Length: 378
Ligand code: DGJ
Image (cartoon, rainbow, N blue to C red):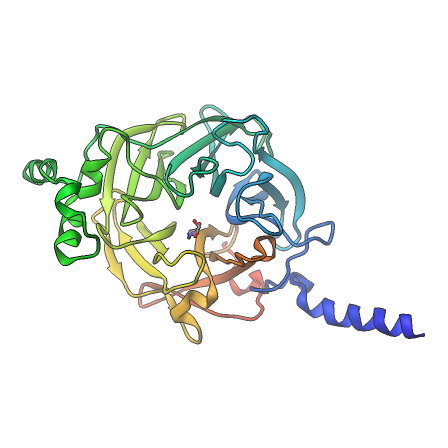
């Protein structure tokens, strides 16, 4: 009897914690997959392919944020019942491999190239044992959406290239900037030099740093890599090659010196919207928002899209992706991570609908909601 009672109380305590009852999306709670295990796909992104959503994300271990497994994949037709499809890109057991087990592999995103019929995964890679110093972009490809993905390479990007949005005279001024003249960080003088491209110039020969990232395929099939660069001080948006596996050398700087991480991008009625975070490690901070009519800019900054209680800390999360819901009108989901650095695999997900008020995206906390929130697209 005693046993039965305690079993019952465990069940009663557990059930309301789980998401997805009746197709409900419950941010911050446990999201069980088809095996009843909390989805382990953090810093993720979603690809819609032939009627199914595929969610790719970082597999997080119990007690380290380093990559011990790789990138996981889950599939769903309704965005609430998730089937574990296993490891899409596995870290390597080979010592010295760029993606050696124990490296840092973050924010993977997968896009589909209709011409090559390959699935292309981009991610932020830090080489094992080097902290966040490497600041590389990694790329892997697969013939099947769920993988296995084959690692191609990791590198800094766009070496010897200047951004498209600097004038010849700005380029000449940048070329004169020397880090030794700005040894003390965070001073007004240093900030001005950063805005002018101090670190871009510093990294010209090695390639630009690439940390928090996403990729975006535009309506014309062109793909772009959007990432925190220049020591997380400036975002860069870079065009990818036709096969999506290289950079073409065409890129722009966005919000120079603005310290943006966690870019998530979407397009509505010809306007590109980008939601980002500030840089506070695993701690949440206030989201930022930008818009542009051309992905290569100019980009304009707006207030945070988050409103209501806890909006100033992005509801405790950090942006990772904006998902367009198929078959629903103007239906976009803001996806964010609530990090748990002491117990990384217990990190939680925030998924909230994006509203549009006075033409601006707005995100408000909801304990639970369903896709019925969006109108069916006729
Ligand atoms: C914030 C980034 O957005 C995360 O992806 C991760 O790199 C943490 N910083 C590490 O502190």
